[in-house]
Length: 475
Length: 95
Image (cartoon, rainbow over all chains, first blue to last red; front, top):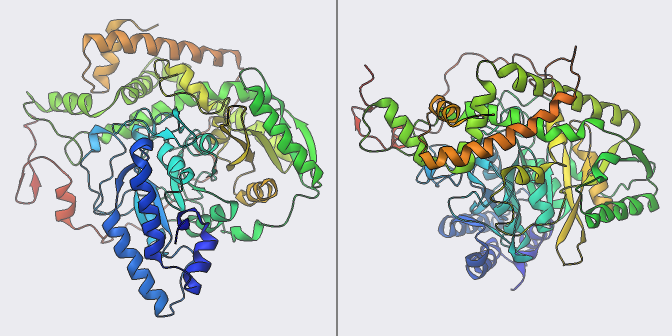
């Protein structure tokens, strides 16, 4: 049966239950596409053919026995290579962890395994999730399925590209400053960044602890809801996950946007944002209006400071988190060091790529005596003002509608010599991360050159449902 | 502005080995990035609180109980590339 790899989760679940096809057939159809196309895309860091097929057969047996299974049972999925998978290499796409095999599963991996996930492989990313193009991966760049000369975005570029190329049914990623939403927009799939703390990060390599979130990519809004249902909630192994009730995210679909107030923040449509991206959001806004939503012009005046706040506090937290990478307990070790300090210098010098070194040095500098107040504390105060901006806006409106990225996917190599220009690629996704609010990137239009353009829907903390309502209306 | 000596000092604090070429390359890039941060000088933050955590959680506590995870001591030990002896990792002399 051909084309099984293009099915949504709901279609997979229905087909598996009714015996129309097996999980083994689903999995094989995905593996076939990976074999055919991943040579040019480079979305996967590792394809787990044997274990995936074994798991698929196990699920087929359970179905044959009439077991009551999750809608995700037997459905092939891919994981960004930042999620610990017991017994399966987890590299963070860094030379430091190139041979690292975790001794345990991340909480979300365990949750998905409890839902009988068929884990088809691990996905490419910028090293330690630092980047906006997946060009900073030690496995090489992931290319955009819509145009091989262009990047898939980042840092979760492999997760977006694999899904856009129908290599699996859903993927997980992480979003610290835009690492799910931006690649989703570049590749034309849905990408959900949840409220800070909504999904457990236990067993996921930390980048910036007060910003990091785990989220998912899907080819439909339903798919986003199905996976969110499986992974959201408190985890005793992640003390940043509040005990806030998890709704059934599927219940938000099909309701419509009648009477909903949709805010258009003027700062997101200004200088530096591609006119085609602006036009796409306006078109989405008009569609919502025609369905009964009310459009409201709002202002988030602190928006322009978000990139600076991010690129002070994130490297600060990253440099502290990566201090634990000493090459002793896990990861890259070196031979021939003169003493222990020399060992650290060599292991870290050889194990980290340039972008990581850059960020560690920025972080170390802004946390050092004499600069801590001027940079780090100042940035944390401005972050408070960004949060207040959003609070005020959400007193007026239910959701915000904005572009995801300033431009459609850029060319491989276009920004790689200019770190600051690359940092600006996240300018429209960082503010929501600063406030810890959820956002979804929805594929909506195409540029004149045929590249996907996404729109971003933002909602108050723990109101992922509102993002889904609007995304569903825009589909 | 960071000069070469300061770049070397920061790298030393962060335990990163840099070549002379790296110092020049990173120095220029760091100065460009840090120069951009000056934009924050425009913002008056007098009396504004610091944000450390965004969902309002404070002191999340749990019982001090050791739980046996799925990883065995042998699994954990296997993560290290260094030589082992009697279930311990051999590291270089520290003093």
